[in-house]
Image (cartoon, helix red, strand yellow):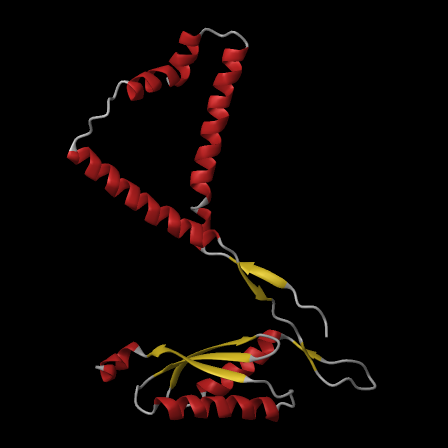
Length: 200
């Protein structure tokens, strides 16, 4: 069996997680440049006029230990908000590996080897599932070792029977087209909004 390629799926919020890192990098570069200016004997007053490092330090040093309850509440709320936002951005940065789709190899013959593209297998399953009267939408995903079929139904009644019938239809279509039998996992993806009142 050929080795499977592993790909990483990341959230779109992952790009926002790079913004704080970029800002921190720019701040470090900027104040690193100020240290270089001080090292080459540039006047501290000139450097302070560019960066304001001494003014900020003096303001923080003279702030004193007394802080009003309002300022404490604002600082606590800001800290909690920062924890939630940066925590979500951190989770979005975590890659989610998955196996890339591969071709379906049929039995080799004297004339060579026959392969079926993943999308062809998925379209076969979708065409078989959408033919069921209760199915309003379908999306299939071929994962080399199994076939996942997500279906949206028009009605909530008869749910187990509808899913079982869709699974049987997909198996029959695979067998009819001479493809190797695959494990078929049928999952309910939702209901048609026009018939959503039936769930109440």
